[in-house]
Amino acid sequence: MEIIINVDDDTPLFSQLVNQIKQAILSGHIGEGDPLPSIRQLANDLAINNKTVAKAYRLLERDSVIETKGYRGTFVHPDARKNSDVDINESVTEILQQALTSLKEIGATDSEIRIEFARLMNK
Image (cartoon, rainbow, N blue to C red; front, side, top):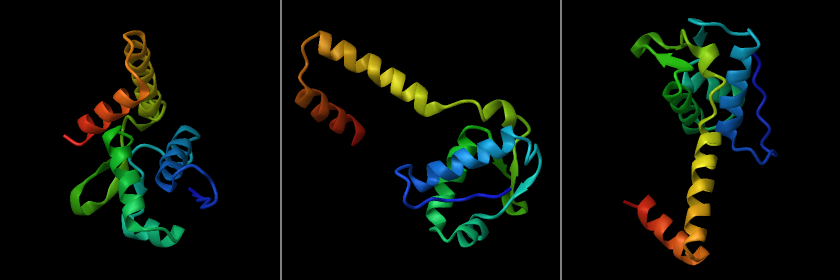
């Protein structure tokens, strides 16, 4: 599996990493049960921060694309192929769009929406 990170791309580095690992799974370059490099190793190989790789791994684990087995390492999840097609960002966008439409329909201003959103996010 070859991962290429483009620091000049507008896409965040962790998203590029998530997308490329999912694509490697979907294309069959890596399969269920295959080991992945440690966070430190992958960060060193890509010359990026450990926290960036850790964030990507957390998101992939949340989506059941990879699984961490303690000190044994990180591996491709048995359901990774099926779960690699799921895009939570798409769902988030759709739900937020519906909420914004509803708020606009009742007359909420952009400012009111931003203030309340920020307040709720900080809870």
